[in-house]
Length: 307
Length: 118
Image (tube, rainbow over all chains, first blue to last red; front, side, top):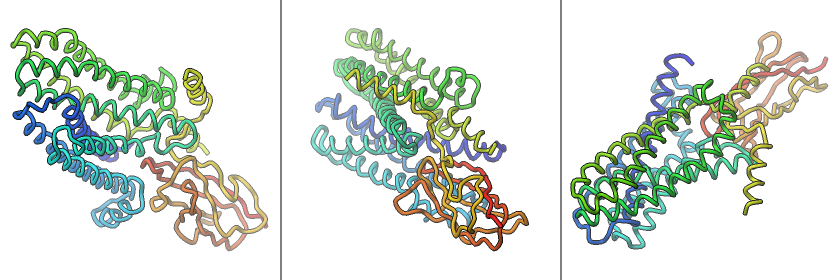
């Protein structure tokens, strides 16, 4: 791949990763709020609302950048005039354009529900469901959404499970950090303790769906070390293992300590902060991965070119 | 429940190859074929849905003259197909070069030839 193409590809990956991070942050914050935040937390709610708005802003801004960059790539645009001409066609006539614009509208509606609905009322649940829908919609722009037949359907379902699990876990970490930072110690300890089994559930969803993706898109363990796609997957797995280590420390050491030691609050905040940073790295790696050709497809591309 | 899981796993392991890019499945006129009458269009069928406005096809004869007489068009009801109008002035061997953009925004390309008999 020429250096200029690689630069543009990395920019698209960055925009897509940030767009994912923003939508994950919005969904995760809403989900944590409806599941775990008690009504008697007046200091926490404004902070959560501000974070949700910030996440929406990141999702929309990065989504716009992704839309422009991807449109330029699709049209093979070499100047702004080419891009300008391509934009309405991408917006109106492609799945990418339809889905991205629709998702922006759904995310905006979800955020409005969160801003104006009660903490755990119907509006909050509807908003959370809309945010989940926006997160899951990404699957139709992934490999599973494009493939046909049984394998395509299985991969599409695994993509949806992967996205929702990741968003429910990584996306709710900033809200968890805020809850532990702002709530009285006993409430903070209770939320940290209840978050752990929820995290385990999300991790199981991530592992199960990753196995399916490995079988369909990578095929053999050797491809992990012989292809660029495999290298990014290995980096993602390494980050995931680090995340698991931190989550285990929270579960078995820091969350129980929070019930009895006020000093544990700073330690668990640091640990969740590190998890958030690792989670961002995972999402940027995911953005990159979605722009690369999976090893099982690369073989077919070589055959096609050889014709 | 167990049998369902086994069935899904079996389908995944046996149903290869998997396609996450648009690959050419078939063509009319067929790849490498010799046809007796000049076709009025070329129909290309791919493994997955296409973004036809961003696909391109050229059909060139041995002298380098273009035989395609328009841009690729979507085929209603078949998102994985595109049709290219042709004007074939004389018999000969034609080289088709296609560039496809799939609905997941990945690009593929390829080429093949067919012959219109004398």
